[in-house]
Image (cartoon, rainbow, N blue to C red):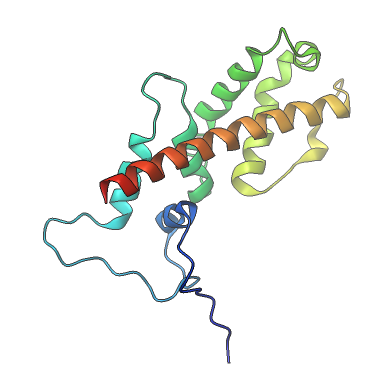
Length: 167
């Protein structure tokens, strides 16, 4: 007999709720049904609205909701925007970090490989450009990865607040 994967005493994380946007699975049982009220929105639409409200209106470069959606959907829809914003964010730290000063021309590429790691779980460590020290490349890609994932997690936390406040 198959083990019961659903823990009835444990509530779903908001990341699991957002993962429903990529399609339904049988990981959690029973499948959650939609209400029959004529004016209720489908749960997927409410999740997308919550992610939209999670965008920081004061920061035009807020890529958190875009990154969270790309991570969940495993799609490159916002890749260019995210990589550009993360490279610019790291470049702003150029004065305080010698590694970024030495390798400023490689920031966009480091952001791309970090994006691939975050979205597709593909580390691509062997893609260190010629002329860049491997330890510098590791610092650049790890910094870009942490910025991306950190912004996505902050956006998901804000979206969870909006989602549960509206419920």
